Image (cartoon, rainbow, N blue to C red; front, side, top):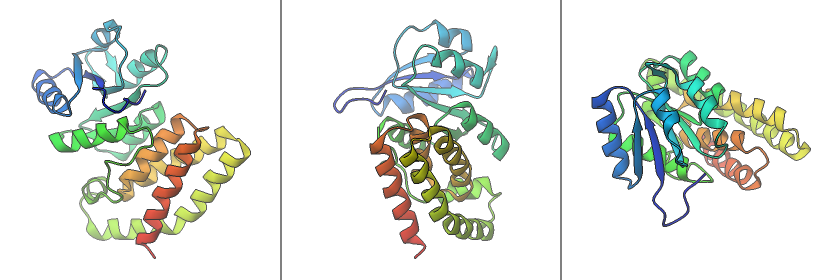
Length: 230
């Protein structure tokens, strides 16, 4: 449920640590946005409000963020789900993306990085608030090794034309299952390479595989990345 221009978005923040919840809610309110805070799965499910964005901790006192997301999805298929976690392992990121989160934010979070991620989530075409290449994200995923980032990006760019063709072909055939499978794999690759804008578009297209506007945003995002490697 992207926010309409001129409207203040509503955000459900699920975070059990009081200090973190205070910091994150203050950062989000500065967007500006209406923020409701829950410290557990039970508190989150007690809210009957409709939200534009759910920002959910991966681990909560009474359950996991993935289980909470499943329950919330039964109520609302359109809200954008973001996860936040202190676990920086690729396996955790992949599990959360596969569970249906559009993006995974790593704690501790800088206020500006949090706001940028939420702005990108609120953009129905995705990617406008995100850089094409995010060196910090790539270095974090690859243990701070600059040489590995450079090599992985070369590989990522060499494979991107084929991945793009597969996605567009699946869309053209109306094969949503194949498209979502390609996009899921692409999101994992984007995370390692730090292709932040493309990752955001891919996650939104994964959630709405029939959206022609998101297909066009995907083409534009891949065009920009391929231009950097030419």
